[in-house]
Image (tube, rainbow, N blue to C red; front, side, top):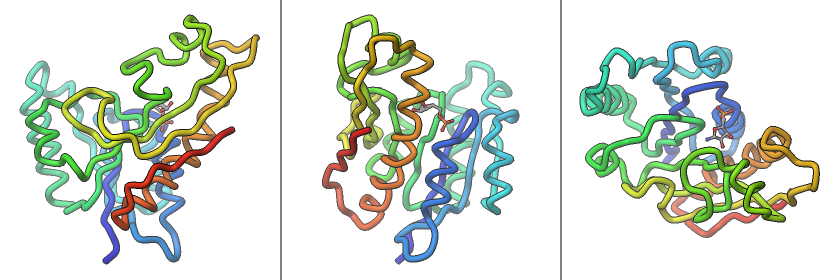
Length: 198
Ligand code: GRF
């Protein structure tokens, strides 16, 4: 049975594009919805250009009422009946209650070699630590921020003249290879780890 995939974005959606473009031909999954919490997200036009239905739930309309935002999001997701949810540059943190309803079916890509550098500013933190390598991770989403089981990692060497910007730019193409590779396995129930290097 072809798995139905919903993708959540907040910005440019380059990882969403890679996921959507990978789900072609003989593939165990198909995109059914792209949701953004940001009405100005550049990824929305990219999804529409690929004929993927889109939906916007502007979190700012809910103020500090996170449960109300999540209830609207949950409702939109239930209507799309996803088997898998991919967070792709989605910048809102979920409550444990929301995650509990989708745990085991929700993935995220994080720009660090987890468990190192959970949270934000990962490239700067790797540089400040003097690391010689960096990378990205795809993991199952659990109540622990960036802490779920790791399903894939891609590694790059840090160059002496790297900045957070050059590191992010060199890492993004690997993200675009890693996430689709993990999704293809996850869609057939294969949780064996994908490992790539740049
Ligand atoms: C990427 O670096 C990703 O790792 C992080 O958000 C950034 C932008 O992603 N989660 P996208 O271009 O919006 O997919």
